[in-house]
Length: 248
Image 1 (cartoon, rainbow, N blue to C red):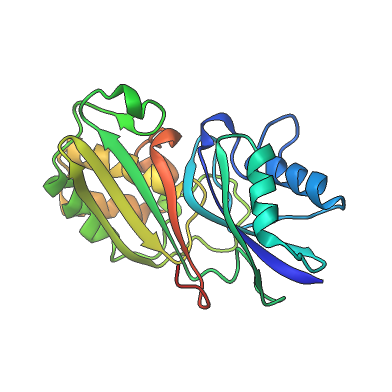
Image 2: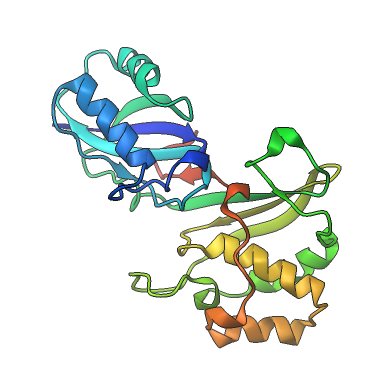
C-alpha cells in the first residue's frame, strides 16, 4: 500500500465543514464517495484539519492509502468530473507512508475577509460590515496578541483538545483594495473557532476603544465569555498548509 496526498480547494457555503457528519453534507463525505466509485474499493480519507460549516479553503490537503495508482492525472480528471462544482481537486501525489495530512503539517494560514462596500459578487464570500474599524486600531491589538501562546479565551467550549497553546508566527490586517479588508494569521495550529473569535474580539476591542490593559485582561482571563463574538463563517478561508517536505 502507498500513501497519497490530495490537494484540493472548496467553497464551503453548502457544506457542514470538512468532517463526515450524520445527516449532513460534508467535503470529506463527497470526496470519499467519489474515490470509492472510481477506485472500486473502500477508501478512508484523513484531512489536514477540520473546517467549520461555511468555511472555505483555497488550499486543503488530505491523505489516503491505496495500491499503486498507475494514472494519477486521469484520477484527478475523473474526480473533478463527478465531484460537486464547489470542490476542485488540484493534484494527487505519493508521499512517504508515515506522512500525515494533519500531524505532519508545521503551519497553517487563514484569511478573514471583510468588505465595507456592498458587492453582490462577494455574497457568501466576505463579511459585509459598513462600520468596520480602521486597520491601525485593529493592528494595535494584533501586536499584543502575538505575545501570547494560550488562547483559551478564543476556544470553543467543550472541545476535545489537550492544550489551548498555539504559536502564532504572524498576524496582520491589510487592505487588499479599497473597502476590502483582510486579516491574515499564520500559526502552528488553531483551536476550533479560534480565528473567528479573534476577529470578533479585535472588532469589539476597537469599537469599545479598549486600552492595552483591558485587552490583555481578555487573554489572561482564559474565559471565552470575556472575549468578543465569533464573526460569520463565510468570510473565513484556509489559504496555506505547510509541510517539511513540501514547498508549494
